[in-house]
Length: 168
Image 1 (cartoon, rainbow, N blue to C red):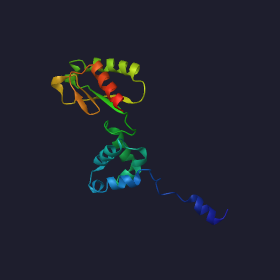
Image 2: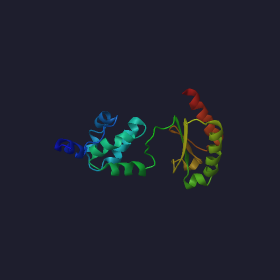
Image 3: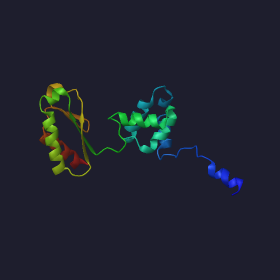
Image 4: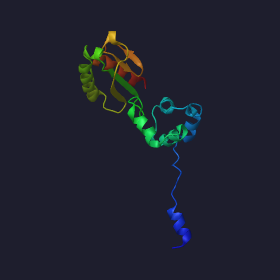
């Protein structure tokens, strides 16, 4: 084998693959990424922009914040509010904090999941538990696509979801 062929084969690629959103993310984070300790805020800004943090964006975010890809991925997966997949069209958040638990949020969640499985089988509705929506006096509380609802029941959630689906 020629010396030229060996050198070419033994060279290690030092550039990471380009992500599809890299140019857009560079513009989006230009000011923020220069601040020390801005990794979490950068991830939040990317999520606000895209609705999620694309896997392909981890490299450019790490580069801009001058941290490793591992640290970026660690922060991204540590915080429950950050997501790596696009959200469903309808996001149902049910409060699981103590005040809401004391007035039936656990039972509400079980009943809602049963309704969701029967009536909303497609991927357009996503449900998750959150801890405290700040509506303790009107528990159990839920948030549906950003709208806070107090004294919520499974039927009320179903009505809101049905209405939102009809509009989309």
